[in-house]
Image (tube, rainbow, N blue to C red):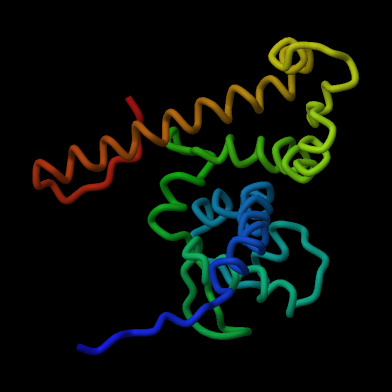
Length: 189
């Protein structure tokens, strides 16, 4: 009988340890409303994306950013460099287009604005036992704190609503496909 020796590998460790890189790329694209702009304008060149988003960085950085989104399956790409055209994937067209009721980007916007900083302080929270959200200094209940700031409250509600609407959209997709209809449902009931 042949035995297989499993070789140790750091792949899972490194993937988890650098996983925030991919998260921040997605959160940045949502913050820029990239997927909404692509849904509005259709496929776009890298230069057109740079212009419509008002980005100032180099073309190399632009291609790196957009190709990273492509590699993570958030964008589709045709062509290379000056001839490249980017467009939304089916998922980003449905769930990350702010104009659609199936938009779930609110939770990602909230994580980019608030969650990112709180999670960055996890080690300090564990060491001190103190809450790491910005409310830590005033002793308020987090919901009372959020409701006092209309913009923060709107982002919180949009984030929570987006998650629920996204779940409902996925349910509708499965139900429609279960009945053998080949269609996409972007509306939430």
